Image (cartoon, rainbow, N blue to C red; front, side):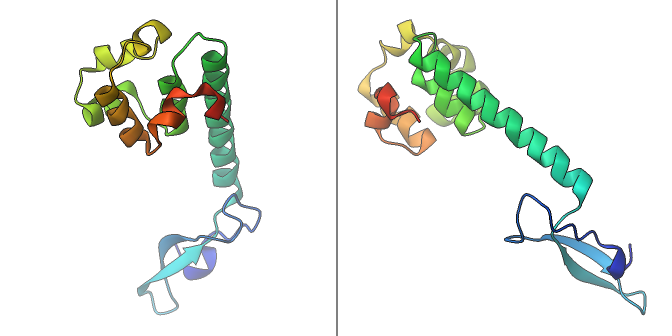
Length: 135
């Protein structure tokens, strides 16, 4: 790609705050670094992906508030994590971690396990245990 062909669509999600790095050739066919604010197809896809993520987080929030799921589900969705990722952080098998998504098992968690979850999500234990803090 030539330097003047690097996409520069100003109507992007990053709103000019960040640029992606591309390598393009200059007039003498040497590669150089060129910043790009993006291009429309990429921006549309990214916006759709973030909308899906926001919907998943809201659905998890509603499940927690209605008592169908533990707060761990909400923070898992909010942090774009999977049970397998979380289980690696807390040192438990994924199938055990999945049980903690259910309110029945969540209520039985000890302080040390709650601390591990809170540390993993970078929140306080109070935020993890108080569903009124879920926004």
